Image (cartoon, rainbow, N blue to C red; front, top):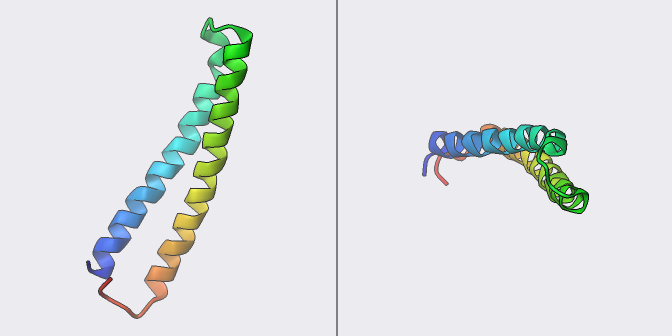
Length: 77
């Protein structure tokens, strides 16, 4: 795989992680409209909080990895 191909894939992954961060927050903020029992809403919020946190960490890691690959003199991976 070439450096450019790898960067395209990494950038795609970063965008997916950003979308997960954004949408998990939106979904969490609308749970009160769901009609779910309070205990079910709380469980869903807990899961969405974990998803949000982990995706945020992945997004940061992906940015760092992209920068590292860009700086690297290697052109085939």
